[in-house]
Length: 103
Image (cartoon, rainbow, N blue to C red; front, top):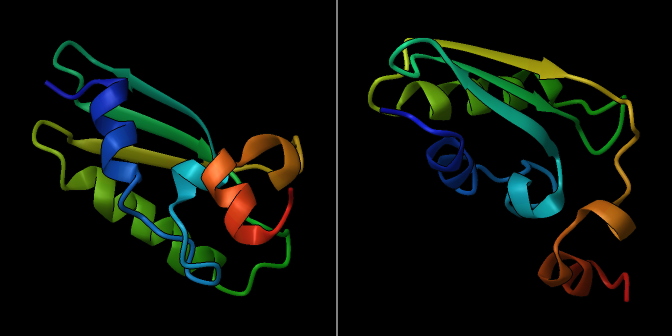
């Protein structure tokens, strides 16, 4: 049965197409919820590195496809939000901050 942890682990494999870093470590995934009697419905709330991201639709499809590949998942909804705006100095992991030269 899918869990929030299983979904987050799967999303660690998805990379931002421009930065080539994992979206979970970048802090682009704001929330994951798993619903339904068997955890078959998954909702992902995420953002993009900028509102004008030229690969936004492709990026959203990558996330949907990854979550759909998890055993037991039947329905996936990915919502894109810009509230709060992505701020890597606060939201990214320490490894990503180091790689981006934020320290």
